[in-house]
Structure formats: C-alpha cells, structure tokens
Amino acid sequence: MNPKQEHIVEKAKVDDNVVIKIEDLHVSFGDNHVLKGFNMALRKGENLVIMGKSGSGKSVLIKCMVGLLTPDRGCVEVLGKDISSLDQHALDELRSHIGFLFQGSALYDSMTVRENLEFPMRRHRNKFGKEKDTLPYVMEALENVGLAHTLDLMPAELSGGMKRRVALARAIILRPKLIMYDEPTSGLDPITAKEIIELMRNIQKKYGTSALIITHDVDCARVVSERMVLLVDGTNYAEGTYGELSASSDPMVNAFFKK
Amino acid sequence: MDDGFYDNRHFSTRFASLFLSMEDLAVPMKIMERTKLFFKEVGNLSHFAGRFFKQALNPPFEFKELLRQCYQVGNRSLLLVMATGFIIGLVLTLQSRPTLIEFGAVSWMPNMVGISIVREIGPVITALICSGRIASGFGAELGSMRVTEQIDAMEVSGTNPFKYLVVTRIWAATLMLPLLVIFGDLVALYGSSLVENLKGDVSFRLYFNTVFDALSFGDLVPATIKSFFFGFVIGLTGCYKGYNSDKGTAGVGIAANSAVVMASLLLFVVDFIAVFVSDIFYEL
Image 1: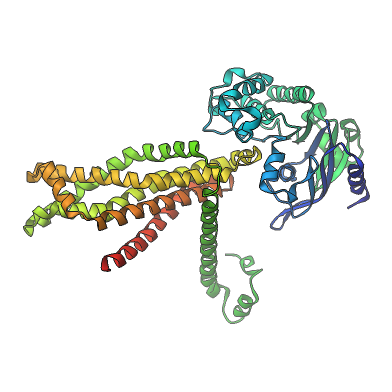
Image 2 (image 1 turned 45 degrees about the vertical axis):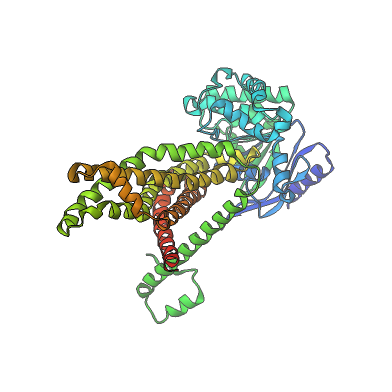
C-alpha cells in the first residue's frame, strides 16, 4: 500500500460516517489481475464517482461490494459489515439496504413492470404486508421516475431510457441507505442520460441516500459527483473533486477529462 | 497447432517429447484434454445436481413459480407430444402390418404395438422430443438471464436465484414428463388403432381391450418410473447449461444447443440403466 492509499484507509478507520470501506482489494481471473490493492471509502450521504477506462475493473469492484464476486484478498466493509464474514442470510439482510442499478437495467423479461418492482419486496413481507398491499409502494417508486403509467407493461414494451428508469425505481423500492449505480448512462442518448442523472440527484435529495456511481461518462461525473476516484491499472490512481482532478497536470488524469 | 500449445505441460510430456515428435504427441494430447474436460463436466454436473437436492428439500419453497413452470413445461409441450405420438403409432402399425400379415399374426398387432409403445418407444421418443423443447428452452432462458445480469439482480434483491429459477424448473420437468409420456402413449395407441380400424376392421373397443389385456403391471411401472428420471435429466441439463452460460449472447445459443445434445445423450444412458435394472426385476 502506498502512503496515499494508507492515508485513505486511516481516514476511513477513524470516520464513523463511513458507509463503504475497501482496503487492499485484489481480484483476479486466472492470470488476469483486475484489481491490485484498491482502497476507498464512501461517507454517509456522499456521492462518490469511480471513473476508469472500459475493462479497468469498475464493474468487478462494484460486484465485490454486494457479494456477487469474492475477492482474492482484502477487506470490503459495507454499512459496517465485512462482506466476506457474512452468511447467506446476513448477506441478504445487508442487501436489502442497498439499491443496485445494473448497466443493462437487468429487468426480469418474463415479469411486468409491477412484478419487477414487487420482486425485491418478496423477502420483506413483514415490512410491506401482503401482496395486495404493495401497490402504493410500487406506485410511489414509479412516480419518482415519472413512469406510473407503465405499471402493467412488459419490459420488452419499454424503450432503453424507460427500462433504466424502471430499474432505478426497483433499486429504490426498499428505501435503501446506499445506492450503487453501474454505468447509469451507458448506451443512452445525451437527453435521456441527462434525465437519468437528474433523477439520480432528485432521489438522493428526497431519500438522503449515499451513492456510489461507476462510470466513464465525464458529464455524468461532473454533475453528480461530490468526490471522484480514478481507477487505473487496478488501483486508485487519483482522488479529489471534479474540479481538482480536471485541473490536474498529471497526463494520466488529464486523459480522462480531454474532450 | 502452434508449438505454444505444449509450453506449460507436465514434465512427463516434455520427457516423452524427447523420443516422439510433436506431431506424434498431438493426437494423444488432444484426447487427454478432451477426457479431462469430459470428467470436469461430469463433476460440475454432479455438483450442480447435489446443489439441487440440497436446496430442493429446504424451505422456503417457490410454489407459485413451480406451478408456472409446470404450466410452461406441460401445457406448451402438449401439442408437440400429441403430434409425435399420433404419427409414431400410425407409422409403427403401417410398417409392421405387412410383415405380420405374411406370418398370419396380424391379430397380435395391438399386443405388439401396445407393449413396444408403453415400455420403450413412448417414453424415449417423448423424452427426446421434450429434450429439444424443454432443455433448449431452459438453456436459452437462463443463459439470457445470466448474460443480461437478471440472475445477479435477483441475487442482489435477496432472492436465491438457484432456488427460484433452477429448483422450480427441474421439479417441473420431473413432474410433467411422466404425464406427457402417458398422454403421448395414449395418442400413439389411438393412431395405431385408427390404422387397424380402417385397414383391419378392428373396432376401437376391441383394439384397446386387447392392448390393456396384453399390458401388465411390470410394463407400466418401470416405464413410468424411468419417465421421472428422464424429466429430471432434461431439467437438470437445461438448467445446468443455461445457469453456467457465459461468452455473451453467443453463449446463449451455445447453452441451448449443448443442453439438447447433453440431455439426449444422458437420456440414452438413463434408459440403458433403467432397462438393465428392470430386467433384473423381471428375472426375479
């Protein structure tokens, strides 16, 4: 760990408001070492953007945070719990506090929009009551993204942008403390991308959630980020606000912000 | 094949290459690799089956999804099974008729067709037809869910995707296939009786009475039991290939295709074992 990385970890250790803490994370697939000692911390209520080139391991990183991938080495703590030490039940419980927006929306093809939104509530019947009682929650989530009229439509009947908005509604249906966005604007036209970014900001304001955004879209990073981490060669290469990083003289950092 | 293929091989291979040329070694090496891959696949499939049994018996049970899958597997295969069964019965009778007439044994037609359809042809043909329909469907559906991260989304939402997607599908195939086999057998017998009725002036009632007189408990039970195993094999291979698919959208096609191939091969292996075991019981 280099001194800069040690500083991040030390800072996270003393900060009670840390929602995600990652220390010395290593992930490899065969001979391909994707993450080589990555460190970061996300504080409560903060919007943190992780930026990196395609194939730099951003999606691998975010999947480690929700237990979809097991790292080779290192510690991943989410909402105060070490992911690697949790059994399945505890992991599912922790996941109920996390909203996740997948890169390709990942809506269930065989279910209607309503069923898609009700699906995460199945495990939390004690919180939401019987199936017929879930409709107000579904409607509220859909109204948040402006798609209340799509309740009974199938995902195949929605456009790319609408799918992303329904996926966002599904991500917030359990009122999570933390939302993770994996490339929220990828594959969308600039206008739809702007709408998604606006929705992300509104949701954060309304529910006060912390957000971790993985992207390579500089415009998205500029609008939503309070702090940014640049992922280069499997490590956190640079960290700072958008203004600080975009003004950096480091050629590697500068390459991300060149138009 | 380039020389790099041999780079990281064991010492024994490198030692052998002192006496044999690379070309001499290429074929045995390929066979060894294939054998290794085969056993790896068998191991993975067994592990997958073990995971199914572990999760199938532990609550919570996904009854609603199981019913939906039973409908998908059963109802949607009905027409295909009906058409196949009818044609098999028809063709079998038409083909056998001249030979039986030659030997003056045409009155044995219902007995011969009934026993061969119930004991072997019905279950195997129905299972093969269903492996094309069900295993490829499971492979493609789960494969596409894997590729589009729907399985990951399910896991993140706190639902066990293996239990929700795999266990319900394997149960549905296991429970529905015996019903489809019985249905297919009846339709095949009807097809056969139609030929006998038109060509041999045998009434439907006489035909079916002769068939049921010829069939014994020992014909029906092993055939029904093996249909459960056929259903299990079809569900297992379809789900195994789909759930573990990768390589993007191309992987979906590969999963569907290899699911049918694997299921069809395993069906014959299971059939051989079933016939072998039931033969032991006949001899007792």
